[in-house]
Amino acid sequence: MKTPNDRMQVIKAIFRGLPLLKKALLTVLLQNLRALWMLTFVPWILFPFVAMGQGTEHDRIEIIQLSFSEADDSRVEILFRLEEAIEAGSVLFHRYDPQGDIYEEIDELPVEDIERDQSGLYYLYRDNIPAGADPPFRYYLAFDEDGTGADAWTYRHQTILLKEILFDLCRGSFELEWDHYTVLDKPGASDDIIPPFFSHYRILLNGLEFDEVAFDEASGTQTHFLDIPEPGTYTIRLEAVDAPDPDNRTRFSLSGRQEITVDWAIPSEVVVDYVSINEAGDAKMMIRGDAQHDEFAYRIFLSDSPSANFEQVGEIRRPANNPFEFVDELSARDEDAGSNIWYYRVEAVLIQDDELCEEAVLTSAPESTIFLFVEQERQEAHTWEVALGFDHEPFSASYTYDIARRIGEEGDFEIVASDQAGSYVADLSDLLPFAGDVFFRVEGEAYNVQGEADNGWQIFSNVVRVNMESEVNIPNAFRPTSDLEENREFRPHFVGFEPENYRLVVLDRNGLEVFSSANFEVGWDGTRGGTAMPEGTYVYHLRYTDAGGESHEKKGVVYLVR
Image (cartoon, rainbow, N blue to C red; front, side, top):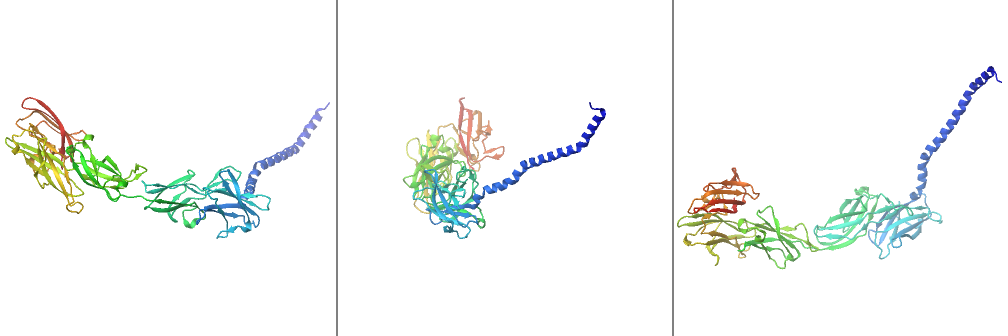
């Protein structure tokens, strides 16, 4: 049995041993931390050196570039380098066979027998492509140092594939499409694509640089349109380069070349000789192209303005004759030849694969119809006068104008006035007491066509009708600046009575009211709120009660002439 004194001695011994225990525990802890550090950090320090050791096979042999021969498309030139320390050994050349889906060894050469390039820094090997083989061509090289087998391999390189060149007639350009120069991982590895070292493509036309485009990394295929200045035979190939600046280029690769011949005709002339209105109200025009007119299409456009708002109304493809005729059926489209002056122009268009190109190659000047209108009628007991006006804006020729008249529906037009210049007052008094319709038209005679005398044609305006039985005469046009005061405003003219419940409203083409009056003696002067309205067609609504108490409503159009 231990005494309290013994117990005290044991406790003192324990306290005396604590520093030794503390030291031992600290030693174990430091040893464990050192081991932990070695496991954690040493691999990260050694890894780059290990990785470098694994990559030395690529450093020993490397393909610099593949390129079709500049002089001969039947050979592919392989430029490569070897590690400087290599003085002996062999290089094995492999080309991909797409039919067997394998790489075949095509040659093995001792290092000392391989040609050097001009710089002396690289080696150059020329592969004669098998007859009938189609690009692209893919290669890799291997190095055998001691004859026991390959020690190092290059990445796999593939040439540019310039696909079939198409000619886009509508754009006047070649459409080039190609697959990029490609670098793949080493043989036996995955087909991961290595980022290419090229940045631009030079497009060579007949051996000279014609255009340059940046490398598009979005996909393996790139497209470019090459504008062609004129028909001819062209040789085209691509050259991939690693820098846009020629002074900084160190690598290049040529594609195979393609030769393509293109020939197309360009129209040199399209003219609307004239536009004439027939009695049905349709517009007949004569169009003149050049000697190769049968190779083109012609689109015909119509507008009520010489400079805007043209709409296509017809098309003629490959006309057999020159000049050729086109009839625009105005009445079939609810147009009225007698309501406006019309302008026609023609576009000459190229045809590609039976489809019309969108853009016109040539456009004619606008040619107008002759527009005849009644400005004013003046009726008294024994007098009936009609003030006529006409507009014409010819481009192709100069004209003289005659006024022709026909009495009734039957019979022929007869000239009643010659050499008129835009206006004419027809005196119908000699026809009284005739009751019926009288028709007028303008007949234009062309002369001095394109500088040639006695080489003209005859054209006609729209036909206007004057009803000599009407109790109310409504002009279809007026000119605020007319020499005749009664022609300076638009209003109906009542013969033999004063109307009651009179109301006249004039609307523009958008249906907006520009004038209204309940006084039959007040006409429209061509303004709205004091502002002059533009020349053009306006719609009127007329309501009145005649002397017999019968109500009438009339609707029509009036042309404001400026």
